[in-house]
Image (cartoon, rainbow, N blue to C red):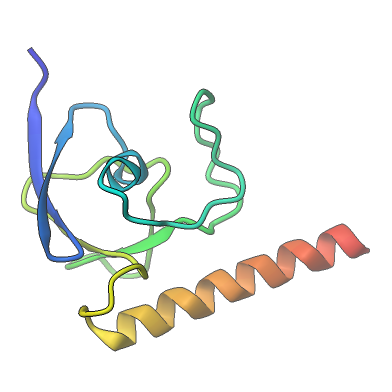
Amino acid sequence: MDKIINFKLNGTSVEAKNGESILQVARREDIYIPTMCYLAKATPNASCRMCAVEVQGVDGFVLSCNTPPVEGAEINTDSQEDFDETVSIKIRRLTRVVSTMTLNVINS
């Protein structure tokens, strides 16, 4: 029997099966998290850093593609209008920096 993990994603209570990543749960719940390197049928390599989310109580950002949720976690993405605006700004800046760096590497 699979263990069910209860946590909050953008303030909404959600459930994850043991072994699921934050990104997989977000996609199932129709919550958008940007990705560039994630392929559903491959092992996540977390190389693009586009899927960064904020987990309350954790310093810095967490990569949602290869991080499983933990019981009781409160996770914020950049996809909901009513959560803390400063989190949204931080995630947007990080995503912009990562995409700019990637484009610079491609163009050089």
